[in-house]
Structure formats: structure tokens, C-alpha cells
Amino acid sequence: MDEAADIRRTIHLELDRARDDFHALVAAAGPADLRRRSAGTRWTNGQLLFHMYFGHLVVRRLLPLVRLLGRLPPVVGRVFSRVLDAGTRPFHVINHLGSCGGALVVRGPRLTRWFDRTVDVLHDRIEHESADALARGMHFPVHWDPYFQDWMSLADVYRYAAVHYDHHRRQLTLHGHS
Image (cartoon, rainbow, N blue to C red):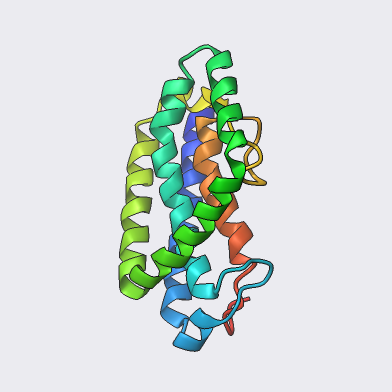
């Protein structure tokens, strides 16, 4: 099996693991669980669950950008990431408030349906990525997220979904799911 096939297989497994876990978490979370503060964030568990979904959606939205900037001279990506890093403070405010608002509208079965659709798209897209595409990448705004590296390949961006999910999964304070 070639390296690109191994990468695809790993990403498929990570996506399926997150989907199964997410379904179990959302199904088991009662109203009191959703209102409880998470550990180490300013979000409630309900807001954090939305944010965990949103991390997968962000990956979906980043893919075209990484494909584009991965084909341009590296200086373009470096400048772009520095511009984004300059907006770190507003990014964090929007990131926080977006999950607060999103959790008010997208929760329960709707949240799992949206998560499923996003994961399905990621499953489909990874199957169509060439080895060359998976190896190309771009510079990232490292101050936006502790798991963003200065330079990330397209494969790294797909893998980011699991890293982000697992990080926040550990912060949930749901009864029986810590």
C-alpha cells in the first residue's frame, strides 16, 4: 500500500471514530450536562460540542484554500498567515461567540446531522486527493490555534480535525463521558 493510501485510511478511521463518539456524546447529554461548564474553557458543554462540530467544518472550508495557496510561491502563504495572525484577537472573540450562538440553534439531532454531513464530505474529498495534493500545503496563523503549525500539508489539515476534536473531547464534563 502506498503512503497516500495509508494517509487516507488513517483519516477515514479518525473521522469515523469522531462521528461515533460524537453521536454517543450528544445522545447521552441531558439538559443539565449541556448547561454545565466545560473544563478549561469559557464554554458550556453544549457550546463545546458545537465547537467540536465546527472544527470539522473549518477543515472542510480550509481545503480549497490550502489547495490554492499550496500551488503559489511560499511567500504568498507566509504573508497571508501573518495577516491572519495580526487578527488573532478578533478571531478568538468571533470563535468564542460563534460557538455560543451556534449552540443555541444547532443542537441535539440537528447537530449530529450537520456533523454527519460534514464528515461525509470529508470522507468523499479525501478519496479524491492525489499524493501530490496531500503533500502540498501552506503557512498557517500559528496564534489562532495551538495545533496549527507554521506550515501544514493538506494531509495535516485533514488530520487536524481529529486533533482538534480530541483536544476538546478531554474538556467535556458530561456525566459518564469524561
